[in-house]
Length: 303
Image 1 (spheres, rainbow, N blue to C red):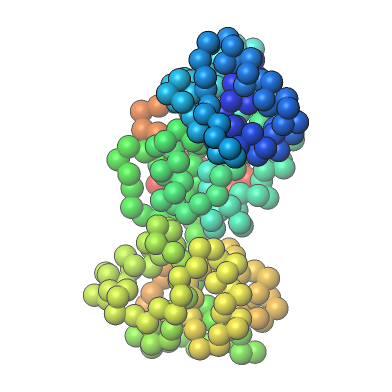
Image 2: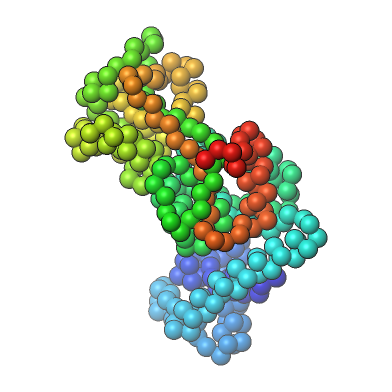
């Protein structure tokens, strides 16, 4: 196990605060100070400059910070290899999921996965598809779950399951008749933010029909589906575009209603993604296999 003092050092360096580091690690501030002093004595170097309430890294501290991250990563790689020798699945699995997946698709399968693999330490980072891809490239997560169509050549993508985007507005108590796309686009639009797979799919579909998003009247961009739904419930004149997977409760209650669009269907794939040319961790492989079982999909037959 890596030296706990390095964890303390990383926490102080991350927050540039002894108090916040103590809160993160659930130890006392004097204990944080003690660990840092021990490291400084061990390396015979000052790691932090303390000027009043301000804390900053020294040159030695910046060097140690770079190597501390590598030590932490090597420890997890070693633990992964050792568990593989005994054919067990254990260790850390850092997942990243785009908003729609993180809100409506992934959480229901996590308890079952944790029950099957109790020795896997699971974390989930949530962002839009672009942010998840960036986190993979920076080495902050081991496996991403994303939506959208634009691919990064440095990442490998594998089909997970299908999804459909629909136009939606506040419910009127009656089913809405199919409408031409031009008529729907006359309404103020409530859309996901730049970098989201949801907006990307919509933009590409409009572009195929010779329509630029800049030509449309956008009321607001929001960074999650729940925000869009709440906005639409208070704005009867607006139309939003969201995953049908996030609408079950609102459609059943009549709070929101799908607006059928003539000759337009917005389908997409949810995909697992990881670094191109690098093998998946054993825990990531098991998670992906478990996810396919739960979703009833076969990654090798559906692309």
